[in-house]
Image 1 (tube, helix red, strand yellow):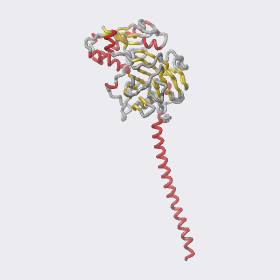
Image 2 (tube, rainbow, N blue to C red):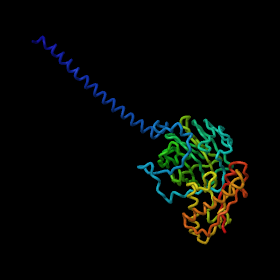
Image 3 (spheres, rainbow, N blue to C red):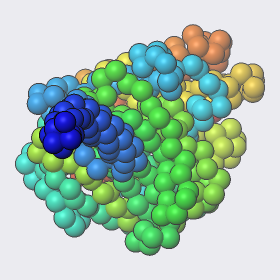
Amino acid sequence: MRSLRPATTAAALLAALTLAAPAAQAQGSILQRAKQRAKEKLEKEIDKKTADTPPPSAAPAASSEESTPVRKSVSTSADDATAAPAKINSGADFTPGTRVLFATDFSRDEIGDFPRRFELKSGNMEVAEIGGKRFLRAVSYGEFDVPLPEMLPEQYTLEFDLKPVSGWGQYVYFTPERDQRNYLQFSTDQGGLEGPGSFSALTQVKNPNRETHVFKVQLMVDGKYAKVYMDGVRVANAPNADLGRSNKITFLVRASADYPVLIGNIRLAAGGKDLYKALEESGRVTAEGIFFDTNSDRLRPESDAVLGQIGEMLVKHADMRLAIEGHTDNVGQPAANQTLSQKRAAAVKAYLVTKHGVDAARLEAKGFGSTKPVAPNADEAGRQKNRRVELVKL
């Protein structure tokens, strides 16, 4: 019997090992899956913070670059991406500068060319016409400078249209000292201000058509104070933004052939005086920030802020009477420009009467077409100055 014990022991050991193997394999498989889940979670967190590449699920459709940009309201709701933003009076305070330092809608640039007024530093970009509008279309990482005729003043505003890319930030710098100053940052998901250190003033935005949507970006600066807006919604409000100043601004674009970025309608202007004070002093002011659809008297939504200020001024100063004058550039037939300018002046009057209850008898609407230019029509900056609405104290 003693001779059988080694064999029995060996058999028992073999059986134990045989039974233990699947358990060990199962335990190893569980550990592997746990490690994989932890790795995936970590990678998601890193991707969320760095946003180095756009996720395939959020990639723009191949036809998006050919689609007509559509303006939608930006929602700040975290629960409902399609909800319209609540009307907040404190956020509708953007006032465009009155003295234009730089403006372009690329209408005088050849399609397929890089704009001659810009300075290309790197990348592949060209002027493209999409949906009847012109944009600078970037299909790679790159940078370009917008030269200015003078140093940025104490008060200024910057406006431009932007179709960003999901997961890739787009940046605007106001000084070569990038490691010392804050800057603008935008994507399809958020926008606002960032800095080289811990400074961050970003707000998440929601838009159901974010991969094809063209945002209206606006910046208003007063000293170190900066406010940033996307489609009229304020996304940053920083008294210590301190963007710095130079005689140029720099756009840093992150794009690719599959994920192009569009930039359009750039306008940079020095800040102006209080509207009522300006009218009292000079009797006439240009109401910067009133926009119409192309060849139409239909007011665009981004005009609401300035029209609201005019309406509030008229309500506060009930004895004031105004002539609202519409003006155009010299593109097109003079008769058509005359008619259009009259209709646009009438549209502004109707807005003030309807929205703010201003007595129609206090307002006169006049159209002058292209007969009273304030700048040469030789370039886009001059034509943009001539396409205006003026307020004249009566």
